[in-house]
Image (cartoon, helix red, strand yellow):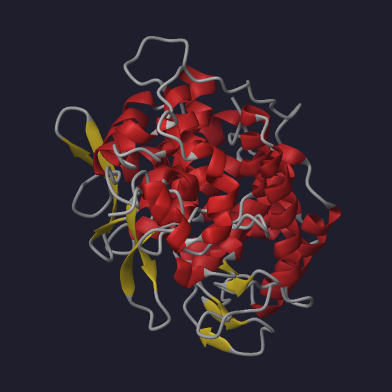
Length: 426
């Protein structure tokens, strides 16, 4: 039987040449020993060495600056939404589910699933709101369910949508990136206070997995790849060979990569941030600004995913964070103006849920609360005369209840944090 590093040559000769010096018996860190790529054996167990993050000088507060809301009104709005979605009636209000004495997860109650998307966004929300108990519970649950052994070690089981619209098991890079960034922010906010979680070490280990998964496995094993393509610097739609040359505008997050670069000093992440911004520009429709669910690395929409629909809404939040945390490019403002103009023309209170990318076909007429929340954050970045109306619509949203409360609720919380000036770097 070949050794693991010999197997890397058989599976991926080009990668093997790059890893030749690291496939020795003493380099346990990349999983090239007979001990295998198990999570605990294969990862760096040294103390975290991440640098401190650099917050922006200030944070825009659209609720105060555009709508004239007071700080107490904003705080009440945010806390009311959080309390309902995390600690409300579990049968019709809450999406946070406590487990035992010290764990918890975010429930996609519509699909009856637990997604890394929800857990990761929950971690972002709770660290921003200084809700340490809920954050720690979400991380402990994620860590308990994290894949421990085999080629997928270090990834988190989740669900993705296939071309038929069905939910299928997958390792979702979107949730993975949220979890890593949540840990990084928690390190800055809570690391020096009493607690049992070393947020910095956990963030460092997870960023190492994201960056070096194929190195841990000494190649592509069982079709499992790294999270990012090493050439384009874009995240794969899923970290598998089936996603070669395919990403998604909703899963590239340059604002996060800038933080990762600050923390690790790895220039790959600044290159990934630049690649993500270029990818957005290549993927968006030049008139409507709408982006597809999935696109190839050159921005060409993938057949079957070549429409604007619910998964695409997450892109709006990524654009807003890029503007808030890093200043971003002027393109972000132009893009936000295109989006606000398109949806305003569709009817500020009646635009649909799903569209063709050129906007000529309304494929679903439902006025979706999750998109109202997403368009609110577009209003923060835009300079068009319509921006205040989108921010006001987001403010007026009722906190969702019932079977559809997961996606609309978690995006509403994100929207409230961004528009209320509470999405901060620690």
